[in-house]
Image 1: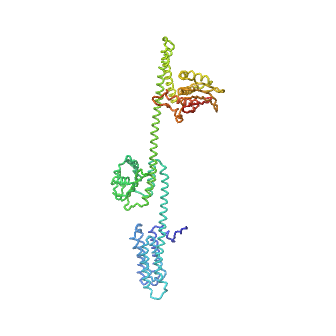
Image 2 (image 1 turned 135 degrees about the vertical axis):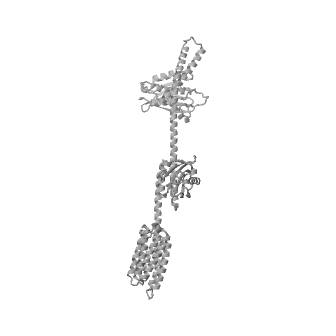
Image 3 (image 1 turned 45 degrees about the horizontal axis):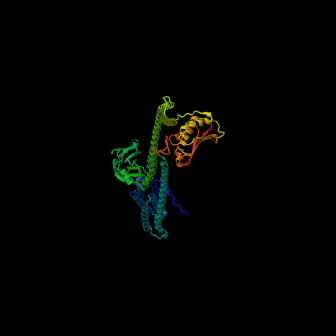
Length: 604
């Protein structure tokens, strides 16, 4: 539906935009000129010329005197009401003295009507319209002694009606102008709020957030004192930043006692805006001496505290103090403060969470560094301890070989059996020490590559010899197969042997019946795969990703059936990756496992 265009009274927009004092003076000069012209040029004047001139001179002086009147008085009804009544009487007297009551000069009254519209007082306009109508009608009837055109008497209601209509339309223009200004102001406020809503939450710095808030809110509210308190509900403490004061840096971030700030304390308790009147500045700002030059009076006529809350969490309070005695906060200002406080609360909440995340990141970084140091010390300790253990174990094994060979005399069958167990356990202990040494070297990054070209069969012979003692406990032998066409391989054979030795040892250890097989086959992309398959106990599918974790064993109970440190597969995985390979596992509980070690034919 189409809307009617706003009513536009010619000349009123310009009148309302010019200062009242200047407009009043200009219109009154126009009244002076017209009335002076009537009095001086009219032939029907019944006063002496001297009296007429004196009459005009008095009105001129009244207008000149207005130049020394303060602008603020023109807004007071106690000033402009007597003034327009005086002007109405002067115009009526000018018409009567000049004998021009019956002429069209009665339209001068409309200048008085315009004066009333300048003061934007419709009630005053009605009073002037009634007064002008009564005075004009009285003198019109009194001065008319002969038969005249009856239409002349229509001027009496015409003057009144036109005055009311003009005043009404002027009032409409003024209201529309006020509504337009209000809409523009609200649009500016919304634009500022939108800017704040976009800029504040995007900032993660406390000081930047509070400084932005101080600038924006003072732009609208214009407070004489401006504080922002950020509070910690858990610690019941606060930090305050002062803006708009020369000593802002002195008070920035100063810890304060909330008991010294009753307005802030009440605002925190109520979680709603708190307005107080005649509050001593010492209560609002304890850091400010009572007799400070910055204070206009010993009391603040008005102070307001606005809570900064978001999702039930209290972040602080905006505290404003005003020096003006007649300063009253409008609902728009209070609402603006609340909206800005809400945007600030979101920003402070984000900043607080960011600080917590930063603190947590720093804490985790410290823990990570401590763990790295502990891991380094552990690796060094393992390496040192392993080296220290290896020497006596080697000595024990050396003497064991001598005793077994009869260097100290022949051994009985029972002694040979005991010596065999001794050597077997010594080899197991040596394997554990070697595993710890390998693991510590890998962790310290000291596992260097020694690459050479060779055939796979010498490697299989070494594996067969070293696994023989473990095979003797089982009712089967490991089967070795090499696919036709497997090429010469360039790799670190010692590390590859360690990988396969660990996997084959586990396969033998966890297989009681059936077989263990090592197959060397060609793989895609110029690789070779060493496939170790067994018919042992198998691995649950959910545990397969965990078997390469260090110190991880499928049976971790104290009464476990199988020996081991839990480092074998961890070392194998790291060594395989070191020579450019990888290990893949397939297994089914009760049916066995298959480990496939794939390495490149040529390792750099």
